[in-house]
Image (cartoon, rainbow, N blue to C red; front, top):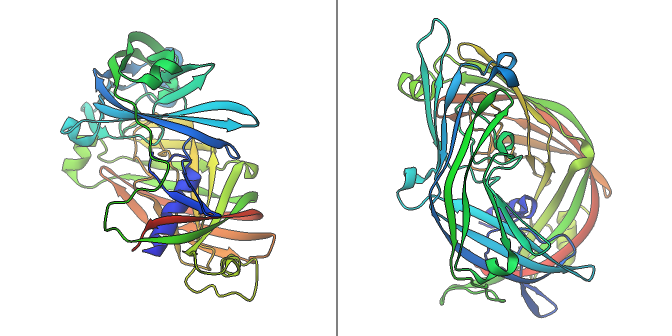
Length: 458
């Protein structure tokens, strides 16, 4: 259980996206609420407002292969279809913070299906695939891709919501089709005053229709969506637990990391499933191909080592567990680590189904988990799926990390090395993905901080 808690802490710290939940952080007898989804490092959180959202309408993308924008070279000319995004509820979180004497704001928007809506998957695609001399294929898929959701930005007292943005994944399914970023200029967006949003009880209208032509596809983006903001609420400033829940005080010691060197390569072999029923539903019968990752720059990676244990343990024990000090007792202290990149290289796809589709797209995020205690199984995954405009699996992703083995090399006081290798293949309904290769990192050790939190015992 302690190990699981440490894993959650590490993932949350690097993801930078925390739902509005409360954790009591106690230092020197004081207590405060910790949030992390948008406040810059070093800034002081002043307040947070949460607004429930009721959603009506839907977003519809109708598309077809377009020779004028490159469908011939990419092998996308035979694809046409629709993608429908139909959320029914959501939440908008708005934070106010102070940094360098100035007041700033950040926002996080999440949308989700209502009860019974598309079986929990608000994005549904139906895509036809026509090849001369072959029967027409049909891919029908449903996903709930909220890793990189709608963009909510605040500038000069105005809140802007844009559903389709570069790096977004609202349209991502296993079927071929345009990416969110391809339609950013045509997607619906709306702007209202921040003061109006904070009061709630207002409607944000995202209705409209625009045409697009980009990256081998052309078509229209139509929206009848309307977001109704409910009554605002503000979380309590202290930790709240149900009566009768036992709590414990835990110390969290965090060491920042930076990536000094990055080498190796990752590639994946894709195969359509042999199950004839499943492969017909996703038009993946007989599909085969490759996915390759062009690695990001070493200097773009940031990471952490996190040691957790009872707050009653001496600080020296945590430093010993982090291999920063000798003489303490590391038993009972859990150490977990992770490194993450934004704009993490590019995904290159080459898939035959039966014609060949080739495409390359940016990978928005890559996450690598570390096991600094010396060996064991970690996991690494792109927190945005390895998707291109070609059909293919929705792996890897936050919901299904790729198992990996990690080996720590020469853990010194200033730097250490880690080698991470994939160890398994994963199935994703109509596809299997087998990864090859490895990542080799040299991590430079940085600043160490600590906090004590109160959490349910277990």
